[in-house]
Amino acid sequence: MAGATIRPVLSLRRIPLVALALASLVLVTTALVFVFYVAPNDANQGFSQRIFYFHVSIAFTAYACFVCGAWNAFRHLWKRDPRADLESYVCVHQGTIFGAMVLLTGSIWAKISWGHWWVWSEDELVLFLILYLFYCAYFMLRFSLDPGPQRANLSAVYALFGVVLIPVSFAAIRLAKEFLHPRVFTLSGPRFGGWILVTYCVAQSAMLVLAYTLYRIEIAGKRLDLRLRELRDVMA
Amino acid sequence: MSYVRDVGALARKDLLLELRARDTLPAMLLFVAAVFVVFHFALPGTPSRLETTGFLWVAILFTALLGLGRAFVPEREQRTMDGLVLAPCDRSAIWLAKSLATLAFLAAAEVVALPLYALFFHHVGGAILLAVALADLGICTVGTFLGAMAVVTRARDLLLPLLFLPLAIPIVVGAVGASVAHAPGKYLAFLALYDALFAVVCWGSFEFVVSE
Image 1 (cartoon, helix red, strand yellow):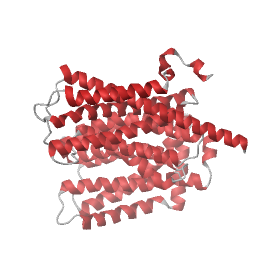
Image 2: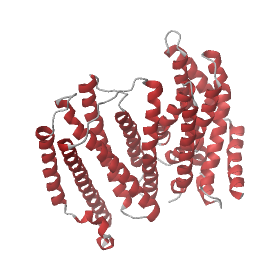
Image 3: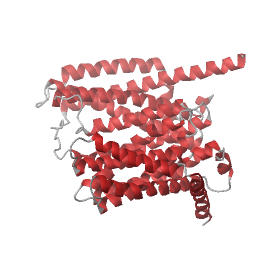
Image 4: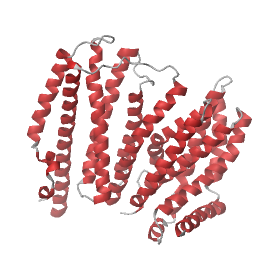
């Protein structure tokens, strides 16, 4: 049994999928209720500022997925853990899905706040565009190779490049602003505290649990697929 | 010391191959000249120095891509990659030597491209030259690494620009910033940092790209 070697720290894997699905349903519903009914209206941006709770928590979740992907990639390269390659791929896949949602929610927010669907002055949005391009290329790379150790290695190395690119790109965007946009937008940042903080925390945990549930579902599906293929090969 | 000798031998092999076959460098030179002419017609009116500087960097990046795409083609066509991997030297030497050879091609192309740019558009200052040197290092180290990855895939040449361009965005930011800013020091430092960081990452992980 592979499960016997898992240390208690990683016991997250032992939570049944049904429990996770239920937890994400409850948390996402609670987050929606908090965002729309409990959180106070923003003084400057009014009702529309509420998209912030989703936008930021989805962005943080996407980062978490990319970092997990890189961690699993590292495990593959370092420890040669046979499960790590698939886990790294699924993490990056979930991260890319959440990344697309960051671009979508960010775009809506930009339209409401500045009247344009896209603003180059919003650091996080630009960063996600770069990361999105980067991780889309990850899939091109992966699907352009036959399954095997070489595909696992190249995917892992590229996923590791991703976590190096995140801070470097962020610094680059901040630097670029100085010659591209001398006028820096100063968002009256949400002052955390009270219900705003509670709502954000609920939304954040909802997104993290949702991402983990989706990850588990995808990985279960992928493992089943692999097993089926193995059985077919045996039968043939 | 033997590491340096290995790198030197491998780089000399690539330069010698180019000297005999003349595949890459003439193509890069012709490409960069053609791109400048295209830019002239793509920029209506009299373009400002700011605009042409941006285009200079697009031209350099795409010319580099042309050279990077060719970097591992001889290894694929002659099936010499297995031999290189089996050779009794550190595998990162293969990447370093290939980066140096590509750097030599790119620098040679720029020796022609920069005066041509000065002739067609605006003069080239010292900050641009420094930025070119630092950006070339980043482009060649990261680009060669990704070239080695792309060459083993089915998509091959198609894949390299897709893998490379998102990683090249910080280089473009640093290079354009250094070229147009009044105080280019910060941007040059950023370029140097990028070069050092990615050179270490590439050096450390090239082993996994060529071995199973």
